Structure formats: C-alpha cells, structure tokens
Amino acid sequence: MSLGVTKVVIPAAGLGTRMLPAAKAVAKELLPVVDRPTIQYVVEEAADAGATDVLLISSPSKRAVERHFQPDPRLDDRLKSPEKAALLASIRSLMERVNVSAVDQPEQRGLGDAVRCARDFVGLDPFLCMLGDAIFSGDVLPAAQLIAAHDRLRTCVIGVEEVPPEKVERYGIVGGVEVSPGVLKIDRIVEKPSIASAPSRLAIAARYILTPAIFACLGQTPPGKGGEIQLTDAISLLLSRGEVVHAVKLSATRHDIGSPIDWLKTNLIFAARDEKLWKQIAPLARGLLDVTSRGSAPDLARDTS
Image (cartoon, rainbow, N blue to C red):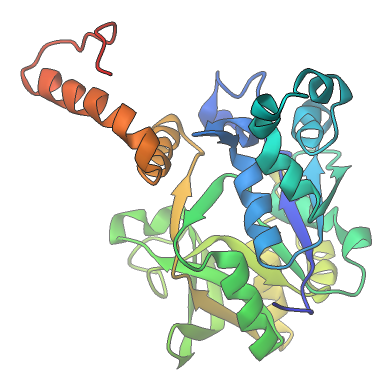
C-alpha cells in the first residue's frame, strides 16, 4: 500500500446533460449500478488503494451526492434490525475507511476549473483525480495501479486505454515513448483529435495522479471552447515547462455511465458478476432476445422468474 498518495479529488459538479431528463433531479453520480450509486464505486476504488481523504467538487444542486456519504440518523433508526442493517453495510464500511468532504465549483467552467477548486485541499501533496462518471472492473483497479506507478516514477501519471480509430476524436489522446512495458513518457496530449492527426490511439481514461505543480498551469490556461478550462491543456503546459508526465496503460476495463445506453450496459455487466443476481436476470434477458429476434414487441409483464 502506498504512503505517498492519500488524497483524492472527484469532480462531480457537472450537469450530466447526456443523461437528461434522468439527471434533472437526480445527479448522474447517484444513478445506481446494481445496488449502489456510481459515485460509491469510485470512492470504494480509492479507499481500496489506500486513500484516506476524498474531496468532491460539487455544486448547490448536488447536495444529495454529499449526503450519501454523511450519517442519516433517521434512516439508521429505521434500520436497527440485523436484517435491515445489512442494507447499508457497504456504505457504512466505506465511511469507516475514508473521510469525504466537498467544495463548490462556483461556475461550470470545465474539468480544469473543477480541479483548480481543490488547491487548498491538496496543499503540497500529490493527489489522485477520478472522474465520477466512469467505473472499472478487473483484478487491479486504476487507483491502485496508478498509485503503484507513482511510487516508482514520482511524477504525474495518467491512466490510458487504447480505443478504436472511430472513437479517437472523442477523447484526449497522448503521444510519447514507451519506457517500460505499458508505461509511456508523454511528449504531447491532443484533445479530441482526428484520427489522421492523433499521436496514438491511447485515450485518457478518467484517472490521473497529479502533483501540485498543475495548479499554476491551470491558473495560466485560457478558456477554450464554451469558456471551459481543459485539464489536458494545463497538462500540456506542464510538459512545456519540462515536467515529466507518464501514461500507464490500465489493466482494468472502463465502464461509462454518461449516457443512457452506457448506463444500461454497465448495469448488465455488473449484474453478471453476481451469480445469484444473474440467475434472476438471465431468463428475462434471454426472453427479450428471443422475442425481439422474431420482430415483435417484448412483453415485460410476463413472469420470467
């Protein structure tokens, strides 16, 4: 377990427009994946990697996200019996391991601006930045993999994944020289390039370890499209000043919840990891496939248990 990175910053102030109207009253970070909200998976990943302090970058409309990590005496009182107490076991166990606090992002001015709001929380320490609309599955999750890499390299470390050519223009793409298996020394980052101009197909994958040097660069990064301050632009400025930044190819699989179809896919994938739960869902899934293959509308009212 690392002793060097214990602070985590999770930007969670965004409006989640791709998940509207579902995200109008319920923050996308609280949308459930099987039995818990997405944001809980993110904090669990951090805690499992040894993190002890988490800062949510929030907004007045996201108070429910913060409340998920706070005690609720009335709910606790209603769940006194052992059977019902188990319903909150996962979040109670998590809160015994990590402290969660929040600070508001005054205006929605992009990911870079959100990270900049964490300056006082970070102080002089390296920190893990985790986007709240992506969760991972695998034997080694990104937080643990990146912290281990930072322990070796002592630099900023960015998690990346290889994406197909048609998806390159959706992401920040890194270029560089491989210095060890799965590890690149980055020489440039291009935000949403065309496949023709992309330096590789290695996309930034929602997880970073950054050092406090990033804050000076964020303060000098001009707003781009839509008035947003891009974190990738600040990292590019960091590179131009001679700072070393590495990319690590993540071994885990990313699952997004930023759009309805991605959220549905993620729920099915995570449900399939639970044998007992999947035994209940599989007959329904097979029934829907059979019916739709015949070209008729599925009858969801039919009992498939």
